Image (cartoon, rainbow over all chains, first blue to last red; front, top):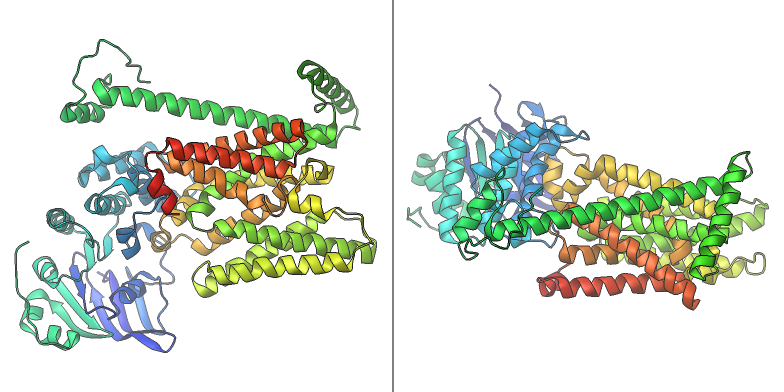
Length: 246
Length: 375
């Protein structure tokens, strides 16, 4: 089976400033990949390259076995950007309207069917926000908002969930519940890529870890990462992973 | 439809779990606080839909007038048009006005009614993409287009509609704005400000250079006037309105997605750049149609103010669109009434009416403070 994402010697720069250099890695179906690195290390840029939001200066990106610029099965990816996490926004969009957007890649210009509405109801139910369906997104707490975005990905029947620091500004209790939800979705076979600044969370949850700082310092299973010096190398300081409970 | 307004309902409004349970049960009679809330919501939705239906009928009537006036010299149509004129005189007689017997008033009114629909409709997406200033910029580009048309007509002796020139330059301006946005990854305010003032400067230079060769009233185009609406302009507005409403109806979902979460829409493989271009071009089209009545300087207000008012009180995006159109239409009709009865400029009257509605919406909105401070 093809990897969900395949990067081959990918390099990208903003003008003269290199953001990502010569990164090669595959993300296999069903994986929970934690993407970590210091601030400004190119994590978000790498995720954008994986999803086709940036075009690499050199190297190849494949999504579900297809070159990223030829990939057109958009509904297979659920993406929660950093902006959607941190900004409430004043646009009066309800939770249900947001989750329904997950069906748009399926229906195109056609009308939404009863099946589409059922799928949206089921997605709201799965993440436990049915009662909030008619609230404006801007009226939700950070944790509830994250669930709404995950519900959108579920409604689109995504195989891959890409999350860029989804729990910034979310209280610890909601965070734990949110990561439990990710675990459950991963157990159902959804591939997850998570950018997260809290390395403890990543080593607790992810099955594999990619640690970058412009270049790839480590890519492998979580145990091998914890035992390696990749963290110190990438962050440029001496440090080691300490497990802790929230 | 939920109809629970029974005063004998004794369930405790403070019982949050009871209220939540009732809201979960979709097929039982709603009870308690949530039931009463839902009744009110359903009544509100019904009122909005009736309002939109009435606006639709009004627009259909106005489009009917445009067609009637256009083809008034054809057999049968001529008869119908004569009947229409008689009805207009009768209406004036009943209301004690001197308005409805004049075809030019109907032209202005039909243009205004259509503006009251299409400007807030397109504005609903523009405002929430934080592109409110684009309308202002494209209005000034269209002004340059008018000036270029006037000079072109006087040099070549061609008698083409200056609005078509404005439309061409306005759409060209829209494509340039979009190109700049793509190049800089943002609708940056510096290139937009340069384009806004640059096209206005070009327009004033061309008009000054061509002064004396045309009797065209620039003031009426700057400030808007009921009298400036031409049969050509009315037809153009009618045609453009139908095109814009259809384009939004067909692309509503996609426009909503890119407005709310552009990056996720890109990941979902929507051709975001194409929809951005569509939105900017629709803005140019609306602005050119609307600047006849509202004037270059005020035209952007109809893209923004009704939407800002609706966003204060709406509970969903769909409701924002409905309320924007209702508020826009109310502003146009109230503005026309003031303009005609007090002989004031139409553009200023309509925009002041819209701002009045906006202030009322702020008063009604519980979240007014946050809504004003964010945009």
